[in-house]
Image 1: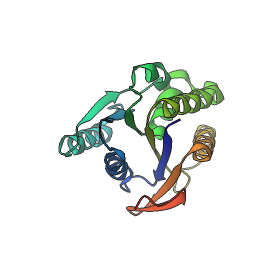
Image 2 (image 1 turned 120 degrees about the horizontal axis):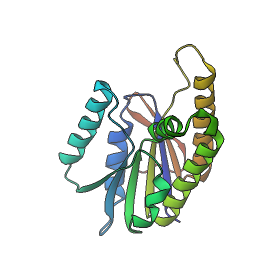
Image 3 (image 1 turned 180 degrees about the vertical axis):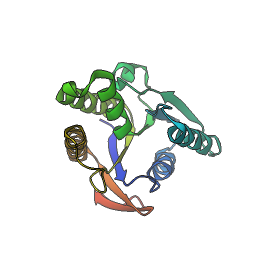
Image 4 (image 1 turned 135 degrees about the vertical axis):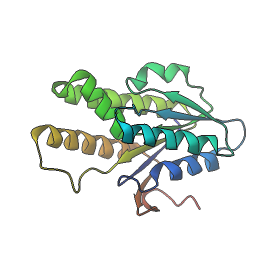
Length: 184
């Protein structure tokens, strides 16, 4: 089994940039860096975020192979080389996409399918870095759908952290180790 790294934090706190640097540092020789992007351009803000991430990878000294996969990441696990270091960005967006695709009524099945796909991918590759968002503070008025989404995301976070080698909470751009040993 490859190592699973879980990186979470607030919106726009530097999680993706940190994960890209960490993936680069994990690379020792012939590993392939794969950026598994789940973002979908649904509005101007998301379009700008996707563009920023693409430009960040293009300006990197590392060569990234980008796979855009907004749904069903389990369907592509067999196509990922075992010597890959994969960065999944991001779990929150993947869950959102899956729920909008299948409806909230499939919630627990969607959650389990995502979890199983992430674990399957982690088992195959050298390292899997999963980026996600903490959406448990400053949320708009709580509707049943928002509460259901928060519960699913929270369960996914707990389950993945349990399996992770390292879990990091990005706080104001600073990685705070929550599980594992310091990388430096």
